[in-house]
Image 1 (tube, rainbow, N blue to C red):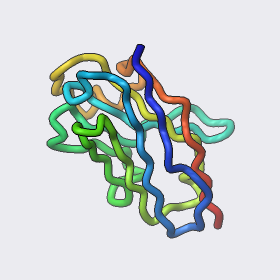
Image 2: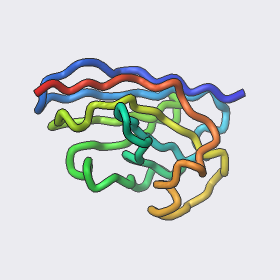
Image 3: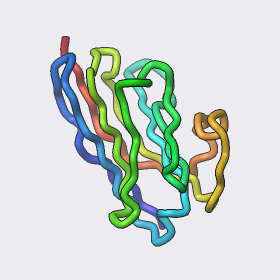
Image 4: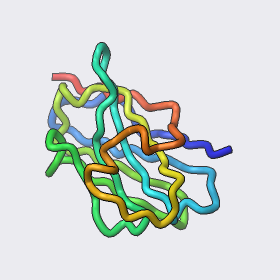
Length: 130
Protein backbone atom coordinates (compact mmCIF):
# COMPACT_ATOMS: atom_id res chain seq x y z
CA UNK A 1 0.00 0.00 0.00
CA UNK A 2 1.43 3.34 -1.04
CA UNK A 3 1.45 6.08 1.56
CA UNK A 4 2.01 9.77 0.91
CA UNK A 5 2.75 12.06 3.83
CA UNK A 6 2.76 15.83 3.39
CA UNK A 7 4.46 18.29 5.70
CA UNK A 8 5.54 21.91 5.80
CA UNK A 9 2.22 23.70 5.91
CA UNK A 10 1.48 26.49 8.33
CA UNK A 11 0.48 30.10 8.81
CA UNK A 12 2.39 32.77 6.91
CA UNK A 13 1.86 36.42 6.07
CA UNK A 14 1.15 37.55 2.54
CA UNK A 15 4.38 37.80 0.59
CA UNK A 16 5.99 35.05 2.61
CA UNK A 17 7.22 31.61 1.62
CA UNK A 18 6.64 27.99 2.55
CA UNK A 19 8.11 24.73 1.35
CA UNK A 20 5.87 21.70 1.30
CA UNK A 21 7.25 18.16 1.26
CA UNK A 22 5.61 14.89 0.37
CA UNK A 23 7.31 11.63 1.27
CA UNK A 24 6.20 8.52 -0.60
CA UNK A 25 6.51 4.93 0.64
CA UNK A 26 7.01 3.30 -2.75
CA UNK A 27 10.15 1.63 -4.10
CA UNK A 28 9.48 2.77 -7.64
CA UNK A 29 9.04 6.44 -6.75
CA UNK A 30 11.48 7.60 -9.42
CA UNK A 31 9.30 6.14 -12.18
CA UNK A 32 6.10 7.98 -11.25
CA UNK A 33 4.73 11.43 -11.92
CA UNK A 34 3.71 13.44 -8.86
CA UNK A 35 1.21 16.22 -8.48
CA UNK A 36 0.11 18.87 -6.01
CA UNK A 37 -3.51 19.94 -5.68
CA UNK A 38 -5.30 22.20 -3.24
CA UNK A 39 -8.78 22.69 -1.90
CA UNK A 40 -10.05 25.84 -0.26
CA UNK A 41 -13.17 25.88 1.93
CA UNK A 42 -16.31 25.74 -0.18
CA UNK A 43 -14.36 25.22 -3.39
CA UNK A 44 -13.51 22.27 -5.56
CA UNK A 45 -10.08 20.70 -5.52
CA UNK A 46 -7.81 22.33 -8.09
CA UNK A 47 -4.53 21.52 -9.78
CA UNK A 48 -1.45 23.37 -8.58
CA UNK A 49 1.63 21.71 -10.08
CA UNK A 50 2.96 18.42 -11.40
CA UNK A 51 6.31 16.89 -12.25
CA UNK A 52 6.81 13.89 -14.55
CA UNK A 53 8.93 10.91 -13.56
CA UNK A 54 11.96 12.35 -15.35
CA UNK A 55 11.80 15.60 -13.39
CA UNK A 56 12.76 17.38 -16.59
CA UNK A 57 9.98 19.93 -16.36
CA UNK A 58 7.17 21.18 -14.20
CA UNK A 59 3.58 22.00 -15.02
CA UNK A 60 1.80 24.78 -13.18
CA UNK A 61 -1.61 26.33 -12.80
CA UNK A 62 -1.68 29.85 -14.19
CA UNK A 63 -2.50 31.17 -10.73
CA UNK A 64 0.82 29.98 -9.28
CA UNK A 65 3.15 30.16 -12.28
CA UNK A 66 6.25 32.17 -11.48
CA UNK A 67 5.66 31.90 -7.72
CA UNK A 68 5.65 28.14 -7.05
CA UNK A 69 8.28 25.56 -8.02
CA UNK A 70 7.85 21.79 -7.96
CA UNK A 71 10.87 19.52 -7.63
CA UNK A 72 11.71 15.98 -6.62
CA UNK A 73 14.50 14.12 -4.84
CA UNK A 74 14.30 10.52 -5.95
CA UNK A 75 16.97 9.43 -3.48
CA UNK A 76 14.62 10.52 -0.68
CA UNK A 77 11.34 9.50 -2.37
CA UNK A 78 10.17 13.06 -1.85
CA UNK A 79 8.50 15.74 -3.93
CA UNK A 80 8.62 19.40 -2.92
CA UNK A 81 6.53 22.47 -3.57
CA UNK A 82 8.38 25.74 -2.99
CA UNK A 83 5.84 28.53 -2.58
CA UNK A 84 6.93 32.16 -2.74
CA UNK A 85 5.09 35.48 -2.80
CA UNK A 86 2.14 33.82 -1.12
CA UNK A 87 -1.26 35.46 -1.35
CA UNK A 88 -4.36 35.06 0.85
CA UNK A 89 -6.04 33.28 -2.07
CA UNK A 90 -3.41 30.53 -1.78
CA UNK A 91 -5.01 29.50 1.53
CA UNK A 92 -6.12 25.87 1.21
CA UNK A 93 -5.38 22.31 2.18
CA UNK A 94 -2.61 21.09 -0.10
CA UNK A 95 -2.48 17.47 -1.23
CA UNK A 96 0.20 15.54 -3.03
CA UNK A 97 -0.73 12.72 -5.37
CA UNK A 98 1.00 9.89 -7.22
CA UNK A 99 0.31 8.50 -10.69
CA UNK A 100 1.03 4.76 -10.69
CA UNK A 101 1.80 4.66 -14.41
CA UNK A 102 5.56 4.17 -14.70
CA UNK A 103 7.74 6.14 -17.11
CA UNK A 104 4.73 7.90 -18.57
CA UNK A 105 5.61 11.19 -20.22
CA UNK A 106 2.07 12.48 -20.44
CA UNK A 107 1.14 16.04 -21.30
CA UNK A 108 0.23 19.22 -19.52
CA UNK A 109 -3.45 18.42 -19.88
CA UNK A 110 -2.93 14.89 -18.58
CA UNK A 111 -1.14 15.95 -15.40
CA UNK A 112 -3.75 18.59 -14.54
CA UNK A 113 -6.48 15.93 -14.30
CA UNK A 114 -6.96 14.70 -10.74
CA UNK A 115 -8.46 11.36 -11.82
CA UNK A 116 -5.12 10.15 -13.20
CA UNK A 117 -3.64 10.06 -9.71
CA UNK A 118 -4.14 6.84 -7.79
CA UNK A 119 -2.83 7.72 -4.35
CA UNK A 120 -3.30 10.85 -2.27
CA UNK A 121 -1.84 12.20 0.93
CA UNK A 122 -3.86 13.38 3.90
CA UNK A 123 -3.20 17.04 3.14
CA UNK A 124 -1.43 19.89 4.89
CA UNK A 125 -3.03 23.23 5.72
CA UNK A 126 -1.57 26.43 4.30
CA UNK A 127 -2.99 29.68 5.62
CA UNK A 128 -1.88 33.04 4.25
CA UNK A 129 -2.90 36.08 6.25
CA UNK A 130 -3.32 39.51 4.69
